[in-house]
Image (cartoon, one colour):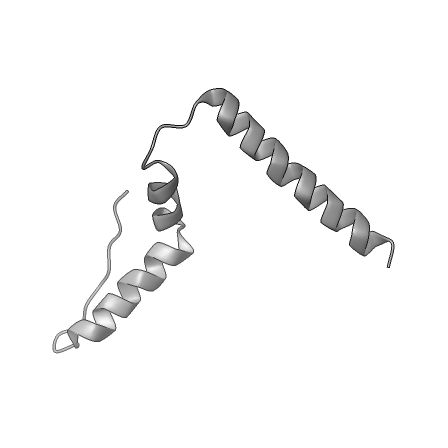
Length: 66
């Protein structure tokens, strides 16, 4: 996970930090790090993914009927 930010000469630190945060957000790096902070059993991972899939299917069906 290598993120590279180009900083112009004389650019403020605040602006560079905002660029870095935006880059991390767009590449979903922080989400991945938080998800991998603790070990998740394979059965728990399958259960979580199944639950997310069921929820998205429910939303999809709800808005198709409108």
